[in-house]
Length: 225
Image (cartoon, rainbow, N blue to C red):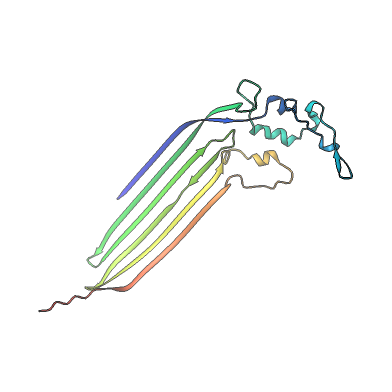
């Protein structure tokens, strides 16, 4: 006996977030009233630290680090009207779930004294949870199980059971760009080693069990005359 089940789901989601203005992406933070001080100008005199303010909160282009500029690839520009920083970016994105499951069972009568049973189950699930912009996550699950057992009658009042099984569960949480783009190599951030950008979260369980019931299922009946 075999059976297969499949499930597909697609949903359109509205992602809303707060992102820096176009001017801020080029180092112009004049829209912020609070003063921004130049860290390179810090001077400490006793317990007092002083610093010079960036003129009109605008950073010189020469002070923008190349890695910061590359990181803007993962931070979209505002697409909503107005000068507010609140909910100034909206985007429609799709979430998906793909699920497949397969089961097979086999029953075999070897003889009047021995019967066999076998089962194999496999499933796979992929889900995509979209993020702001290239920052979503994927979840990949692929568990499977296998089992075989034998029931053997040794005598009219003695039965033995034997079972052997294997169970595996794997859950992987990966980034949206996994298998698509190696962003860490592109950014090459100083001090950050090569990380595994494919498996951000990984859980695996592998279980093997074997049980043999000794010939102890014994029954005895006696009838009085």
